[in-house]
Amino acid sequence: MRILPASLGRSFNGLWFGTGAANLGDGMALFALPLLALAVGASPGGVAAVTTALTLAWPLFGLHAGWIVDRVDRRALLTGVNLARAALLAGLTAAHLAGVLSLPLIIAAAVLLGVAETLVDTALTSTIPRVVPPTARGRANARVEATINVTNQLAGPPLAGLLAATTLALATGASAVLYVLAVAGILVMTLSPVPAGAGTPHPDRPGDGLVAGLRYLWRQPVVRTLTLYTAVMNVVWAAATALLVVYAVAPGPLGLTTTQYGLLLTAMAVGGLVASAVVEPLRRRFGVTTLLIADAAGTVLLVLPVAVDAPAWAVAAGAVVAGAGSSIWRILVATIRQNLSPPELLGRVYAASRVLSWGVLPPGAALAGVIAELWGVRAAFVLATVLALVVMAAFIRYALRTDLSAAVEAPDETVAAH
Image 1: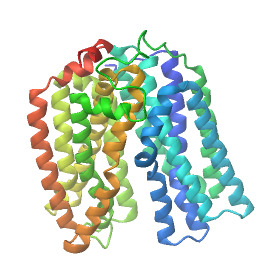
Image 2 (image 1 turned 90 degrees about the horizontal axis):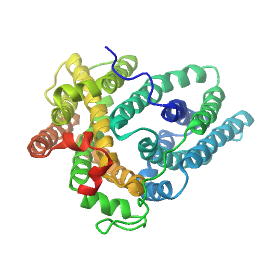
Image 3 (image 1 turned 30 degrees about the vertical axis):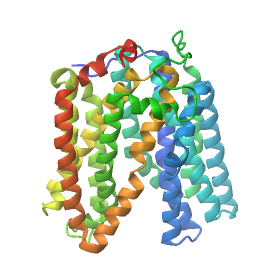
């Protein structure tokens, strides 16, 4: 039985190829930058500063990214940003080979790469409705999610590690080449025109300003509610991301080696990949509401095994289920957001949702760290489990009262009803 159709059209295939190439470059670059910091003699704090710099863009620049995406030609934007990323990585490679690379240069590059990510991610999700018909958006989002899982999480880091074993310049140089390859896919795209009248503000919609997407998101009850649930669940994910390594890797209670821990994370990514491939058949069989509730349960399983001191296999199984649920949630919520947002605001609505839902990650991780310092790692996971259970109970009540399936299956005209 065929899970996905062979093709969603030439324009989508170009976008799809560009997404794969760029995300493979992302996965390699994000792996290589901390290694470059170590190569120039950075302290642990300096290496952490590079990682922090990569995450600053969404809370600081996210709304601006949405405003830019909604006002410029997206083919030109995706082409220009990918070429800029290629030039940036090529510059880092040259500086490393010349022996003039420094930690401040790496941090500056990390900040710029983070800004580029906000632009590319926002342009990508708001371009999908311009290259596929409304009925194909779910399949398109699933393909893109699966591709990101494979390239960014599964293939990128190990490939970068393999190249870096020879020289770091190979890893960063290959990233630059991949960003150039992404442009080849982008140039194949032909975007459908924005519907007539889309540029004219609706009486019930906000205007054309920087926070227009945020205002529309807040007035659209389904998109607003799903964004808020995503944000609260991300607090749980932030705690798990920050502390799971401490609990799992020896001398932590699970006693895993670094290799075994890497395999656990890989299994989580594989769970997301498999879920991306089968989300459409699952949606037709079980419905949107059931799948989203299952993801809320998966968030509980991400932290519950650690909270109850379960064995390693249970922790791994929970992580795989959580990874699968997370992919399904992102695919379905992306389709809902695309269907319920006016075309001229889609970039800003997406960016606003990212600012709200991702903006909790740094404080969530910091809070988990404080709790772990005061009462221990398991105490942090116990509190995260309690939060996850409360969120799941609240979401079940909301989902059973809301026709979320209609928001996924409806064409563009759905926007007018909201």
